[in-house]
Each structure stands twice: as structure tokens, then as C-alpha cells.
Image (cartoon, rainbow, N blue to C red; front, side, top):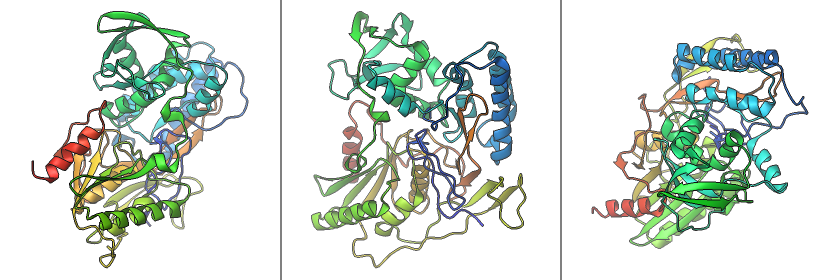
Length: 467
């Protein structure tokens, strides 16, 4: 029987990953968490260094984890290409290393595997690591940045998200190293479906990755627009590694011209009834305000639990029955097999669950609906996007090309035997409702300005007015 819902890594590369055969993709991170990367799970005490033999045993464990868990590695990477990358990594593990140093080698596999749900995560968890580091007086790269797929780095704000006169300026050199070379190096270690997605994730996590690959710094020498300056490192924690409140993740703003902006930054909240109450109130406010254009902003949404949008959004929007996918491939793993299933088999079947519309819902929205996406939109947020697009419930807008419309999921956390890093591997792949393949792409292209996020919303409102 197919999974009927999907949890797909909220906060891709984040602090928690879930596996539930009722779900097609899961909270991670990301998140997160994709959720989401470099935020593995806590590990027990470990020796300071590992021998080359121990490190290579962990590489063998990575191979075994993929073979044992993934239903079709070719979904994201040519197996021969991955095999060569694994051998290259194995060859570099030629001297004793601590877990952190070993991760800088093993994480080179992340970009090769090219899937937001397939990653070697940082030992002990990046969020925990960076919080403890800052608490102990550690300092980080002083700016929040925007990294492009072409490996350019631009200043977006100070690390604490306060404004800086340098906003939008391109960084040319960092401590004597070409900024392009720094970004290119770090992008090669990020996970994510595409370089566009990896660039978005690196932008959020740059302070952590720069610290881990280039070392601790009290000051940073920068060249911006041909001018050198020495800037003090920051004592703050980047926003990507902070816990978010409900109000930070979920917001409704009523706009001019009978518009509304519903921002959903995750499809996860620990108290689902609170989210359902929020969306009920939001659609009631829109009805009372006479809203005719609704923009659902999921540009920052890395996934979560499909229940959140199936029960919290679709009752107000869906006009006919829908499914979150058309077919799936599922690997049968130890402890998850059902009667008649054999561990190691791959089940291929259709996704049969249908969700009926609530046509008599007094709060059902009958105006124009736009879903605003970005290359960062991932996991369950991709499934929501494809359902909206495939069933004609709304217009997909924004910038695509970041995530596959066919999503992997059912992520498993597999501890490597020596370093205790976590290898995250999906156990199924779900094809979108229409059956199509390829990257998620919008119906209406809207260029997203990383230095002025509301610009895309204003563009959509003009589009709604026919301008």
C-alpha cells in the first residue's frame, strides 16, 4: 500500500528527520531539515582522531547504506559517477583525522549525490555546534550573504540581519582568497538537487561553512569593489540556526487592491491544531476583507508534513479531488516490511489516495491564487506546488529550476560506525500527480530580488491586475 501523506525534511538539512511509511517525504531540513544539511543528530563521545582504516570503513558504510535503503540511486546521480566520487574520497582519507576534518572530505559526496534528502551530515549537528561555539565566545563571518549558482558572493545584510550600506555589493576577496573560489569550493560540499538550490542553502549557512572550511577568524579582510577593509567577525548566531516562533514562520498580510500574502515558511509545526486555527482565521479575514488575489509565499519553505497543507490549506482552495502523486518506488528495509514483502525488494506502484474537495466550505476562496516559489522551495513544499499546478488550483509563480518535481523521501538516519556522522538516505521516490518529470518550473516567471523580497509580491499583484 502506498504512503498516503508525505513528510519531506522540514528545515531541510535540519535537526530532525522522520521516516514513516504513511508519508512520502519527511521533516529533516532542509530542513530543514530538506531539512535539511550539516545538522545531523547528537552523537556519543568519540575519540579525537580516527585511523585511515576506520575512516574508510565509514565510506564502506555509506555505500552499504545507499544500497540497503535507496530505491533508485539513478534518480539523482549516475551510479558510475557516484562510484568514482566515492573512490576519490576514500583515497583522500590517508591520514588520521578528527570527525570534523573527515566530514570536510566525506561531504564532497553531497553535491555529487545531487538530492536534498541524500547527505553526509555534520557530526553532532551544525545547529548545536554553532550555538555552543557562539555561546563560548566564538565569532563568525560578519555578513549574511547571497551566493549565486555562478559562485559569486554578495552582501545582503549584517549577520544579525540588520541593514548595512554594503547591501548588494559583490565581495571580491576574503582574506586574500578569491571569493569566487571560496564559493565554488563550498558549493561542491553542499547537498541539494541542483546548484541553484545548493547556492540558496549555502547563502543561509555561509557563516557555518566558511568557519568549518577556512577556520576561526576574529577579523576578516574583505575586498569589495576594489577596496580592502578589515571587518570584525560577528558574535551572533545566523538566522538559519535559530529556533523560529510560530509568528516568524506563518503570517497573513492584507495588501492593497484586495490582495493578501499568506507566508508559509515550513509545512511543519509541533502543534498542528494551532496551524489549522491560523489558516481558518486567515481565510476568514480574507473573506471579511473582500480579498480577490491570494499569494501563498513558499519561497523559504523546505518542506514538512503534507497533512499541514492537505488539511490546513486545501479545504479553502481545492475545487476537485486531488492526489499528492501518481506513482512511487519504495525500498523494503529491515523493520519496515509488511506481510508478503521481502527486505531489499523495490515496490513500484501507483499512488491511489485521493482527497476530496470541500465545496461547501463557507470560507472557500474563489479569487485568483498564486503560489510563489524559489529554487529553495523543497520537499513537501514541492508536492504542494505540483498539486496546485497539476490540478489547476492556482498559478505557480517565481523562479524554478531548483528542485525536481519528482521527490525522494522517507529519509533514514544511518550512523557511520566510527565517526558517528549521520548518513541520510531516502527510501522512496514519488512522481508528481501529472506523471511528468523534470525540475519544478513556474507558470509565470518572476525574478526574485534577494535584496528586496517584496518585489516579487508587487510584481504578482501587477500581474493579477493585468499589467
